[in-house]
Image (cartoon, rainbow, N blue to C red; front, side):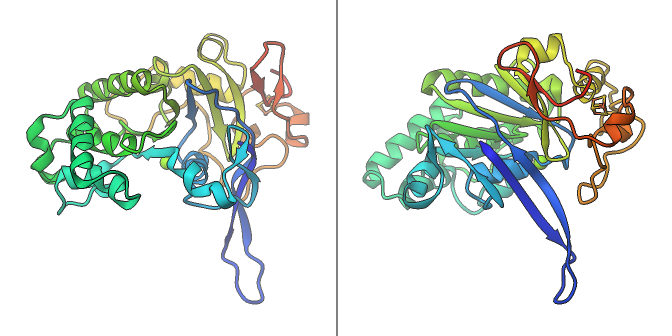
Length: 311
Ligand code: SF4
Ligand code: MG
């Protein structure tokens, strides 16, 4: 991702200029082939908007998505887009309730005219087997399956096109804890099997800890820290990452929203604070933080970056 931004205009009218919401601001991120890149941050920080730009579901205001150095635009867009497939949080809303699983998983093949009906049906059966669904599931509808099974269907549908890159947007957040672990293990097995590259989006650091090779932390539309799993979990440098980690390590069962140990809620993204966007919540803020926005920069360890004046 190269300088990727997405701005929305809010409340604009014929004679009135709307406010600009910078959902994603100048995000540059390299996802190494064959690795799992985690992307974490509170809800509303721009993670899903970033995912939509990668999937070609929304157009960037600025910047490019490059796959193997080629921009995801223009003539090759369709071919490249097929190369990137999503797995979303709530498979129920994205699976047609009236179709049989076999039809749902085979639909991308049919749309792209790949193979004869017979070949398609073999490929679908193989894929259902790979994601751990019983044979009979092929003839069932989404409503007849459990939540975990539906997520397996969504995974099968994403992989049937043999993508290189899979964008997992909170793929286990809607599932029971016991099922979550099964799905995460399945995703890791499939990654090995197909040599996939994952962007794994989550609001929950505990979920990504055993999954990712690298991790990027997002706050108000910007990456504030990026590094290897060992570095982020062992030596987090940004105060926001430190707060997220502290809250992940002290789970409070029963509370839907994690208390991240910060005084205020996240500021309105359409009216971000001046200087460092994190300063109103930062326990380490000093005068300069109110005026100058820190750049995301290398700080010693190669391949790790952080945006804080005092990291
Ligand atoms: Fe906190 Fe200042 Fe660092 Fe921002 S730049 S994270 S306000 S210490
Ligand atoms: Mg989201």
